[in-house]
Image (cartoon, rainbow, N blue to C red; front, side, top):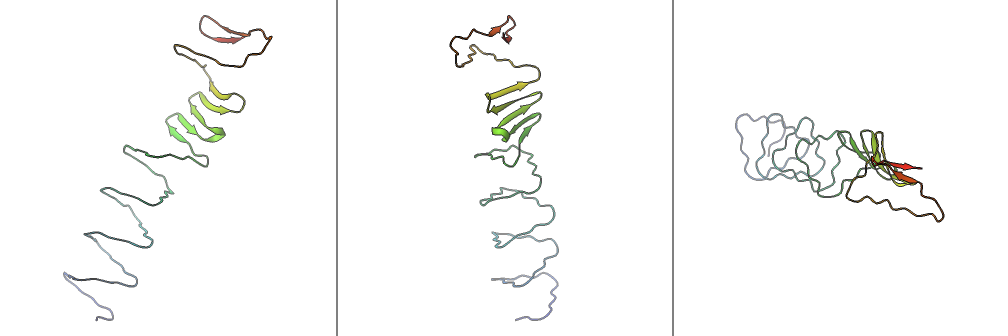
Length: 156
């Protein structure tokens, strides 16, 4: 048994189990070879590099900005909450108002009035081998829609 302040200089080898209780400070370059288990809270200050696979099996929370610089694969839902948005250049997908896709000069959104509302400052074009607009008919009403030679839809 060693008690009191002890100073050891030079190379030191310990064979067998080492149990340290109480505060411990390691100052200097440290290398651990072999499996390592840490129980309790682990606080890391300073930059950290992980080379090799990082497998997180419990819940994870990132409170700062997260920068992903490689290909990213999501194998389950991506839930955007609390006013968050998905942004790709000028394209935004947001959950507000029942869901909305925003792009330069326009948007596609859920609408309580229209069901689906498509807006654009330049115009909207429907193009396909067949374009059908299904709507309820009103008995006794005169048709009031015209399509001109340029394909524009007009209410008359």
